[in-house]
Length: 162
Image (tube, rainbow, N blue to C red):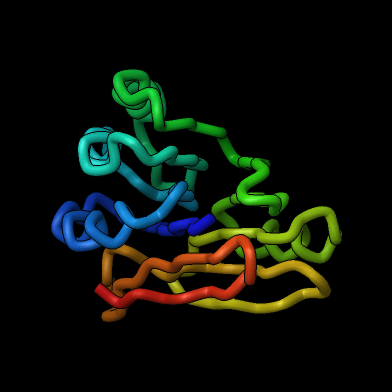
């Protein structure tokens, strides 16, 4: 299974539009928070209508009520709140927005893959048997706009710069 991971899109619909053709190749997509505006949900849902999308809240996701209302129009979108725990392709996966929390989850040895965002820095680490992954920022504020893919069979991570 190919898991697409993105974070910190911060309303950048232009970068999301560049990411969608790549994300369409994934079997499932994880968003690590900071979508920001509700219109981003519509863009994701329309761009990936057949791909399950798991989303956690970030610190800049303002109108969570309207985000949830927009998400209800797309059966493939699942909102998890602050933490998502899912099994994907034989991996036990946790998704959270914050690096400190993600590191603690990874060190707990309860997960095979832990994904996070918030600091806008692409990062891949191996902590014991767990892969700790920040796909980087989609928005491109710091110059690099990236997403990541994880192969659940090999646990190999591949970054894509947009």
